Amino acid sequence: MATLIKEWSKLERCQQDNGDEDTTHIGVGPGGDFQANNNLFDNLITGDETWAHLNTPKTKRDSMTWKHPSSPVTKKFKVQRSAAKVMATVFWNAKGVILLDILPQGQCINAARYCSTLDRLKEAIHRKRPGLLRRGVVLQHDNATPHSANLTQQWLQRYGWEILPHPAHSPDLAPSDFHLFGPLKRHLGGMAFETEDDLISELRNWFDNLDVDFFRVGINSLLSRWQKCIDLHRE
Image 1 (cartoon, one colour):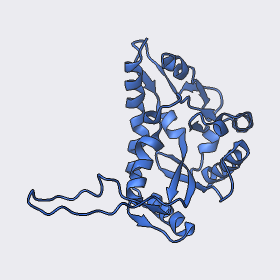
Image 2 (cartoon, rainbow, N blue to C red):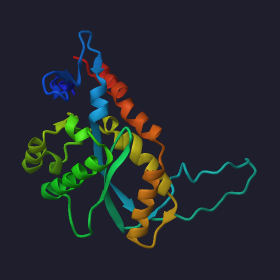
Image 3 (cartoon, rainbow, N blue to C red):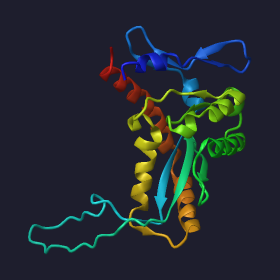
C-alpha cells in the first residue's frame, strides 16, 4: 500500500470534447490531500461480480427479534444456502445500473467472456448514458485475472477507456463491495426462488427500484475513502 499515492497520481488525462484541452481526473495535492474533479465522477463506471443463490438464508443480524428477558427461547431451524446460484456482473455509475449481465450455466468468466460483457456494456452505455462514450469512460474494476488479461487490456485500449487503479485486496475501495452487494444480499435474505429466471427477475426489479441517490452516495463516497486510505498509508 505504500505505492498507493504513486499509482493514483499516475492516473492522468482525459481529452475534453474539443480534443485540445485536457484535465486531470485525479491526483494528490501539494499537502498530500486527494483531489478529483467532476469529470472523474461524471465518467466513472464501476463493476464487479457476485453470486446470487436461489435460496439465501437470513443473516443472524436480520433474523434477530426483540424479546423481553422473560420471553421463552425461540427455536430456530438452520437454513442452508442452496447450491443453485447465478453469477451476476453489475456495472453502474452515479445515475444507476447500466448493465446486469448473467453468466450462462456451464460457462466461466475468462478474458474472452469478460470482453463479450464489455461489448454489451458499451452498447448499454450508448443507450442509457448518451454522450459518455464520446467524453471517455473511466472504468473501475478489480485486478481479477479476466480483468487484467492481455485480451481485456487490448479491448480497453482499442476503445480508449481509462482504468482507475485499484489496489489488490481492497474491497473497502470498491463501490460494489462496500455499497451495493451488501444491501442486495440482505434483500435476498430469506427468499427462495423456484427457477433461475425468477431470481434474475428479482435482481432486475431490485436494481431498477433503487433511488438514484443511492448510487450517487456510493460513487461520491469514493473520494473520502481514498483520502482515508492515503492518510493511513502515507509515506
